[in-house]
Length: 96
Image (cartoon, one colour):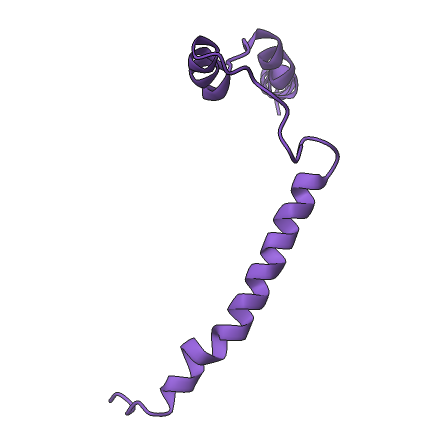
């Protein structure tokens, strides 16, 4: 490789390496719909924001709830799998 190719490759590597850092500094904070639209109308109607009953922002509670829902869904699908996909197949005639 020539010196020019090595320099170009090194500069592309450094640009890719530091681009997330540069992008994070320049990116402005965009508030969500809840904060801008819903919060605005709630304040106009006299309803202030309050903490949720179950705060899923603490620790791994949200991850635990998703895992629990996936486990429950897996058991339900596993229980009905035989009824839906296997039990009725014996009565059908094979296709040619």
